[in-house]
Length: 110
Length: 115
View 1 (cartoon, each protein chain N blue to C red):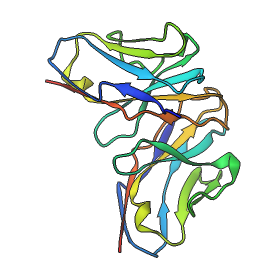
View 2: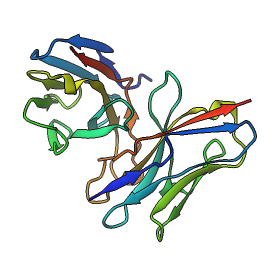
View 3: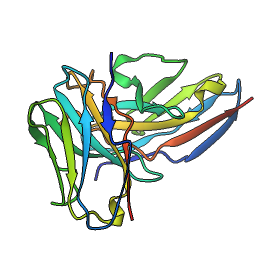
């Protein structure tokens, strides 16, 4: 069965410390991978996608096909990074049908 | 420009009643999605429209749920004989293309509470 796991419900880090959000997936084939973010009182929005190999707001995500993981990292967390983060694999045989993990709440304290 | 809008923002109803939730996508977006987000969970796919037709309704939990998009723009999610377990935030998203470069733009959601 297709499954995406975000093992941490809550991550609390100090400003300036590194932060890593874990995402593991179990899918047939090779899905595309996304991270979505929801800031307080804002809409869910795309943070970054694997295919673009981009760094957004200092975040990067590394795909490890062997471990089927797509962890999100930032070397120096900022207070404005406090938000809910969702890993979302996208099966390539059903474009658009995002399948979200349960999410990780990140709290960055000064 | 205007983003995806959803009405109402909150809906309280009684068990057994019928509800309609509306989504206005970004103008020109041909793809429209409905998701349901229960407390403590990520959004769960319900249905996808390409234009006027439902291209994938595999996420609808049962036949009490139905959605339409008659003119290829606004969509309405309809829930018959509501149950307490239907309480959730219902999210709508739209996009202009499909594939790995697709970006889904989400609305603010409708929070449904079934008493």
